[in-house]
Length: 60
Image 1 (cartoon, rainbow, N blue to C red):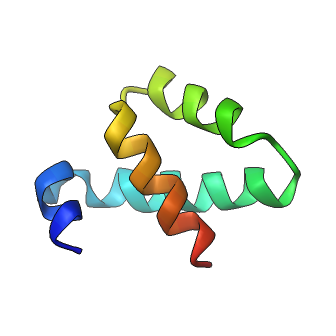
Image 2 (cartoon, one colour):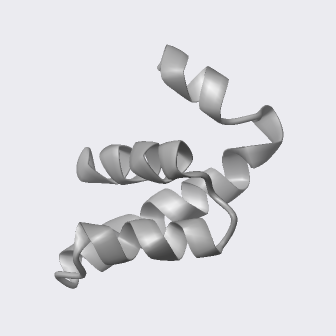
Image 3 (cartoon, helix red, strand yellow):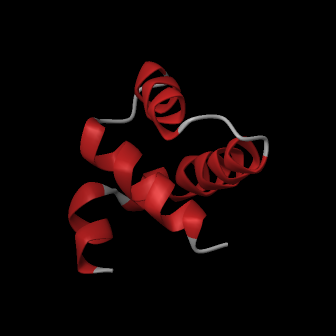
């Protein structure tokens, strides 16, 4: 999780948790990873943060 420390500030934790849950729901609904990444970036996450969110959502 060292990567998370560099990518996410402590103040991001609530938003990150919500985004991980949302990404998991989208994956369950068969939304493509590319579309999930794009939507996360549209809400303000960086490319690297978006990838980390999806990777964490895959662990659900």
